[in-house]
Image (tube, rainbow, N blue to C red):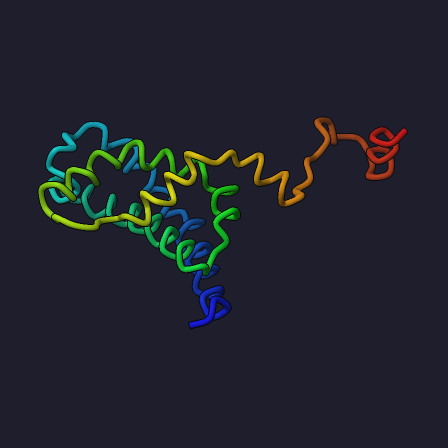
Length: 155
């Protein structure tokens, strides 16, 4: 399958799930409630509804990792936009994922999430933004017109 065929799916997934209020709520619950549980039981050892909520969140990020590895989404765009979120979810859910692998799966489990998070850990999002040529707003734009802003930046 060509990469172009993946683009509509990637956009749909990102806009439908990631930006949706319900996903944001589930992610917040996962981040807030997982630290209150013992990770040794893995994801499968979590009580409901936390287990289902956690699975929805970590599977979303795993899917992002799959799309990056498949070339459907450019890695640098993911790492520039959700770098912090990847690292934050792994810091909380990682011990549960590792325990799940060890005690229940005996094989791959959310490996794409771990891969994209490891890449996020090794990457400075501001360097990617610079490389992409992303512009920054001046610090005080409350009263300046676009022409005044240009004039003060290039006297």
